[in-house]
Length: 111
Ligand SMILES: [Zn+2]
Image 1 (tube, rainbow, N blue to C red):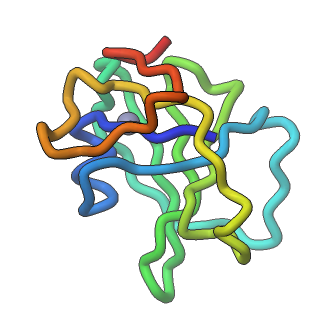
Image 2 (tube, rainbow, N blue to C red):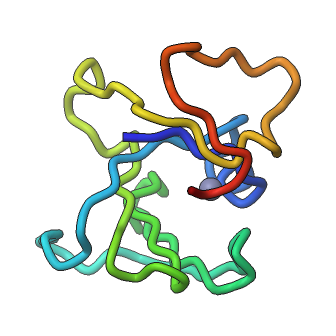
């Protein structure tokens, strides 16, 4: 579970950072094919973002630089109270007013 502060996640989420749960792409099963779009990610390679075609809620993010892993986006969780971020990434792009949990490791870019 992580918070990403990169500009692409800021744009996609409409917020200072995007939160998600990273899982192995091979372990992810979906019942419907989500709508997708592709952007140039912070790595310079494509990032595929999935969203609900009905309500627009973000669903998944997968970077072509590391396709074996997919981030399940925080807004998809039925129970958000169980979400506990374990790290903050791309903090070099974080807003000056973002509050960080001092007990969570921070990485200026993606570790
Ligand atoms: Zn990001």
